[in-house]
Image 1 (cartoon, rainbow, N blue to C red):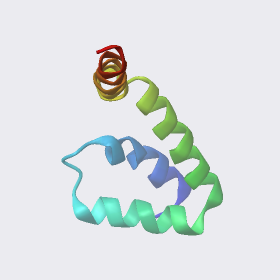
Image 2 (image 1 turned 180 degrees about the vertical axis):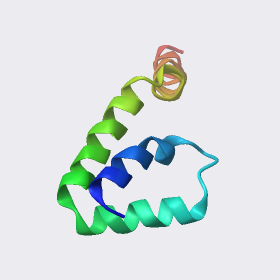
Image 3 (image 1 turned 45 degrees about the vertical axis):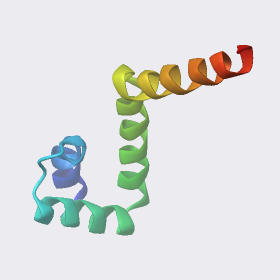
Length: 72
C-alpha cells in the first residue's frame, strides 16, 4: 500500500464494518510511514471530537453521578 492508497482508505478505519485485510494493510502502512500515521492520528482526534454521543455521554453519565454522590 502506498500513501495515496492509504489516504483513499483511511476513512474506512473508522467504520466498524471494515474488512480485516484493509485494516491489516492500513496498519502495516502506518507502521512504516510516520506521515500517514500522523495523518491517521489527526483524523482520529477530529473523529472523536465529532462524536458527541461517545465522548459527551460518557462524561455526562460519570461526572453528574459522582457529583450527586458527593451531595447526598
